[in-house]
Image 1 (spheres, helix red, strand yellow):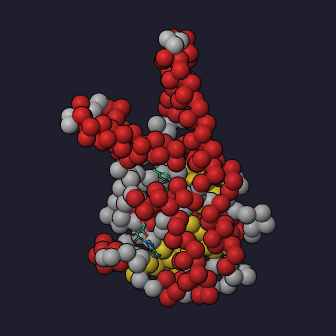
Image 2 (tube, rainbow, N blue to C red; image 1 turned 180 degrees about the vertical axis):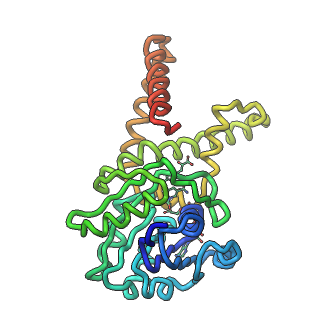
Image 3 (spheres, rainbow, N blue to C red; image 1 turned 120 degrees about the horizontal axis):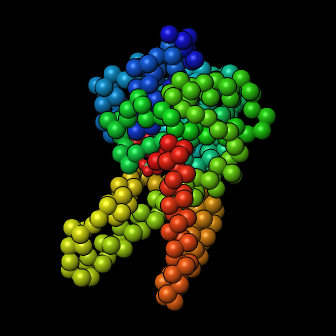
Length: 295
Ligand SMILES: NC(=O)C1=CN([C@@H]2O[C@H](COP(=O)(O)OP(=O)(O)OC[C@H]3O[C@@H](n4cnc5c(N)ncnc54)[C@H](O)[C@@H]3O)[C@@H](O)[C@H]2O)C=CC1
Ligand SMILES: O=C(O)C(=O)Cc1ccc(O)cc1
């Protein structure tokens, strides 16, 4: 088995993502000699101890990071500033600090100002997940064949970047590096806007059901069902994502609204060619995803 990448790795937040990382460490080895899990959620630390997916379980983040050469934040992005204020004075010199947050501009904003000298910050975002959350939702194969995007700020120690990249390779992930602003635009269109649309379409259907006193949902075909899977996602996590990727999400929403209006106009005026073109483009995008084996 490969030498462990970290001697003592602290995972803060043991929900879907953090507990999946802990499971990779436990089931496959190679990530860390010792895994420290820290979670302040009601009952989560006890559940993590019961699951046996970490060597040490803590509820105090300051104590949890003591003596760790690697720390990974896996809490909702709205919690990053608070966690950083707690852990910053306790981070070991030379430690690598990384994360899995879905927004990266906000991570730099919240973590960089408090970063102690000699601690290396390498933000990351696994483009893998499900609509489920909590320590029971995780699984060791979650990151396999999926991209993780790293957004190291200019001047980051290349050895620290390589260490985080290797962590994700050992989880089976593929890697891409980009700046935080580009990341936030890319995920706004491929992840955050689809969730915004899913939450909205479910609310609209629910309003209609109330107005018509009809059980609209019993007629839901598979298209609507696909939206409901996405719309079942965690409230805290998605509230935080929307609030922390505001400019990029609003820009993509404006572009989407314009394009949706154009299709609506084509429907109103019976412009079959325009409608067909949009459907063809949908088919093209689906085929490209299947070719990339990401569908
Ligand atoms: N769910 C998904 O599909 C994906 C989520 N992400 C990102 O990864 C991060 C974690 O997401 P999930 O694992 O899905 O969330 P989750 O809701 O399943 O788990 C979050 C955990 O953090 C704990 N927590 C919250 N505040 C804390 C604090 N101050 N100190 C210690 N523990 C705290 C909660 O008790 C919970 O157990 C988020 O930033 C999210 O945006 C990234 C990729 C995919
Ligand atoms: O379940 C889904 O459809 C997802 O889109 C999972 C997901 C959620 C948040 C992320 O930042 C990345 C991936």
